[in-house]
Amino acid sequence: MSDLIELSNVSKIYDGEASQTALAKVSLSIAAGQFVAVMGPSGSGKSTLLNMIAGLDKPTQGDVLVDSVRVNRLSEAALARYRRARLGFVFQFFNLLNQLTVLENVMLPAQLVGSRSQVARARARQLLDQLGIADKASAYPARLSGGQRQRVAIARALINQPVVLLADEPTGALDSHSGDSVMDLLAEIHRQGQTVVMVTHDARLASTYSSRVISLRDGRVVDDAALETRPIQAPSDLLHIRTGEIDL
Ligand SMILES: Nc1ncnc2c1ncn2[C@@H]1O[C@H](COP(=O)(O)OP(=O)(O)OP(=O)(O)O)[C@@H](O)[C@H]1O
Ligand SMILES: [Mg+2]
Image 1 (spheres, protein in one colour):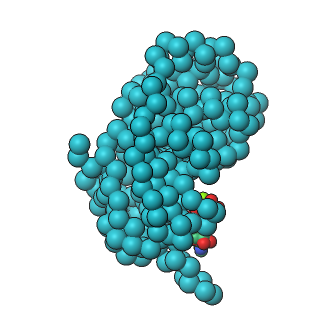
Image 2 (image 1 turned 90 degrees about the vertical axis):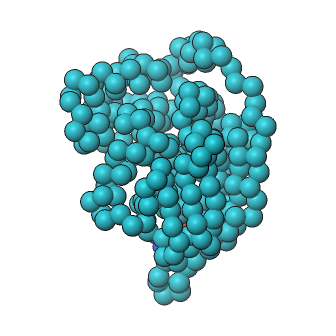
């Protein structure tokens, strides 16, 4: 399998009163179709690593290649286009726009890359349906539970069919039941072929859902382990579970 993401000797040093090395010469590659968990103690560089892949921040040194795009060489305008068109990003605290409805939130990235409204709306509805929250399309995020909000954020992240879905502690703000339910959805999305890179503090989630765990400490990769993938439930089973679980 060819590599979708490749980091070569990536270092990130934040300048400040004391300069802070967030990543130190990290080299790794991620093949299309993997479900990678990034683990490590607080401050070990997990979010920085994800932000490098997302082009949210530039490395001090080294190269970041995603789907043949050399992310660290892009101008700000090209970076914005790259993020919108090729990436999906899910955050711990959802980052939904409270003044827009669920449907409008999900449609927004498609509209930003110039999709026709009708096309964006149809795809957004399809995703909401797939993620078990079609009945919330007209609701505002403030009325939703945490688990429902994260589903909306996942739908928004997927609308432009990103080459990689990046998730930084996607269950960090959820209770364990809602968290497991969100993870089941990510597993199903992965089963359908989506490459996923997820930061988590939770070793149980990492070992249950991912196919590989990269461990960071002090900005360095200290372990990189392929896991046996667990047998995945048939999609119809997941669908069945989801429909019984609207009230997360
Ligand atoms: N914008 C910034 N300016 C200065 N230092 C930063 C900045 N962002 C991160 N750092 C530092 O870089 C190091 C790595 O931070 P990072 O946020 O990547 O850690 P993390 O592993 O995601 O931690 P957590 O589990 O707490 O989210 C930390 O020492 C942090 O203080
Ligand atoms: Mg972090």
